[in-house]
Image (cartoon, rainbow, N blue to C red):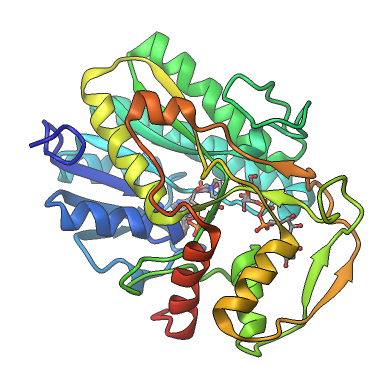
Length: 335
Ligand SMILES: NC(=O)c1ccc[n+]([C@@H]2O[C@H](COP(=O)([O-])OP(=O)(O)OC[C@H]3O[C@@H](n4cnc5c(N)ncnc54)[C@H](O)[C@@H]3O)[C@@H](O)[C@H]2O)c1
Ligand SMILES: O=c1ccn([C@@H]2O[C@H](COP(=O)(O)OP(=O)(O)O[C@H]3O[C@H](CO)[C@H](O)[C@H](O)[C@H]3O)[C@@H](O)[C@H]2O)c(=O)[nH]1
């Protein structure tokens, strides 16, 4: 079997945060490829109904005893760590909760892994670690990290912990800095369901369905081609595939390794709305609103490192195909 899809020495995968949006897509991929999966999740933002494969353990990564019990009861080869609170605005209002959950929670998980001799981790980081880009080009992993909110800072702190843990304890880790996760499982089994929903694409599609408040477009005076922010939307199944390849990479590579994950292409808010109008056939009305605090004008990934080192490439190349999968889910959500 090819190293891209074939099985290596890894059999048992612990998916922390596997009841959430991205974690459930990871879960489905691993389960269908024959891996033994355990999801550990406190359901703070995740959904029990989304965990349709493998074993589920309800628990909090801040609870060391619960983690110890899990590692004793189940052999684990690798941990994929999706748990986080991830709303930028909330992190500004309540930083203690964010540092507690995202940093202390992760250190607790790492300590439990060390005690159980589990030495491989794939970590969900974010483009928010970069802060405001220093130039207009694509962002590579070597761009300075200067987060402008506690959410991004909490992820950067964990990245630093992982580097130190690699030197001190031999932990192997891959840090994946995602840009904007979007879309849904192409079979419609799972999708994005957050409450409140802050992300652009689900909010646009909610308006297309005639649900809730009108869409707000935050800011129209950015120095971009139409005045609205540019983001790099990457399909959630492409993210799961990158995790899969990162997991396989850890079988033969020591140390800490960091990769951007995006599509490599940027779209303005207005371009996303235009694409969604075409796909849904709905007018999708919006109101202009002031800039949202903490929004950089443009964030687009340089993904060459993930292509070269992980042999990963996004399959959903066009934002329309990403929105189409999300639209299918939003018309028939299961949870
Ligand atoms: N969605 C994006 O665009 C995006 C972009 C960059 C990075 N990320 C990161 O990717 C990861 C997954 O994001 P998502 O969009 O799937 O979020 P999500 O909120 O849907 O999923 C997170 C999951 O973690 C669980 N969780 C949170 N804290 C926990 C704790 N203390 N103990 C146990 N479980 C806990 C939640 O219940 C949820 O099921 C997060 O770490 C997020 O910061 C997401
Ligand atoms: O109702 C909305 C929602 C969003 N936007 C705009 O659409 C763009 C995308 O916003 P999202 O909230 O969908 O995504 P963000 O770029 O703010 O955030 C995402 O990417 C970040 C990294 O860049 C973090 O990782 C974060 O967790 C993740 O949600 C932004 O310009 C935002 O101002 C609107 O105009 N109206």
